[in-house]
Length: 86
Image 1 (cartoon, one colour):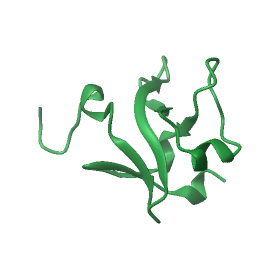
Image 2 (tube, rainbow, N blue to C red):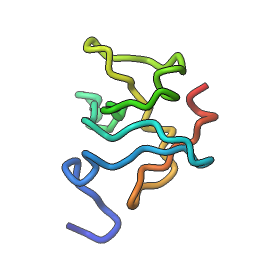
Image 3 (cartoon, rainbow, N blue to C red):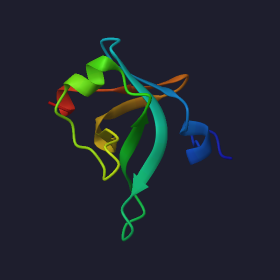
Image 4 (cartoon, rainbow, N blue to C red):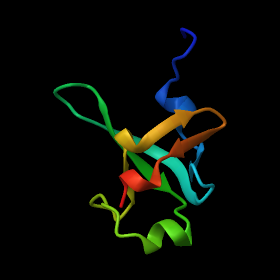
């Protein structure tokens, strides 16, 4: 894999936190746009109480969806901008 790229499997299980340190859960899965192939959402697994308290979009299974445009960086954690969610 080229430097600076990450596979979907490497993303799964990573903790999702806001840039202010609020824990949202873990990456359970990814949802793609079938036409463009772009990642549209992160599906949150093991959602925190905080994440559940927000009125975020959910999939047909009730899992919380985080828009991929809110992702700021990916490393040991997936860092998101909470402002982009609310």
